[in-house]
Length: 122
Image (cartoon, rainbow, N blue to C red; front, side, top):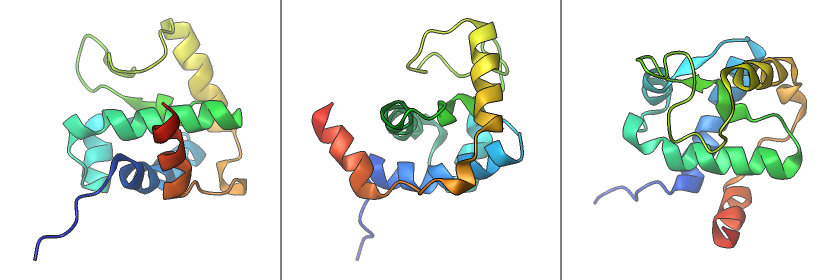
């Protein structure tokens, strides 16, 4: 019997603690590293990262997804072209600093329902 396919909301729930721990350790992650830690194909990270971005915006948190970066030019060290915000490099670095300084461990981890609710309203 085939295992049920993970939804984007399930993937966002899986990604969240990896990003929160990385932020607490003040470490960026490449898309490849995030794929390796979660088992989600690198090409499939865009939608769950967008859900995380929207959730953070709704909760007035720093953009936790901003610490996931490209390992290759032209975006080396910065989020890829699919990143939802069109920031300058300086704005990305400022947001990264906000993400690193934020108290992620003191926040409730979002649940699948939190991400599904925003998918339905998008």
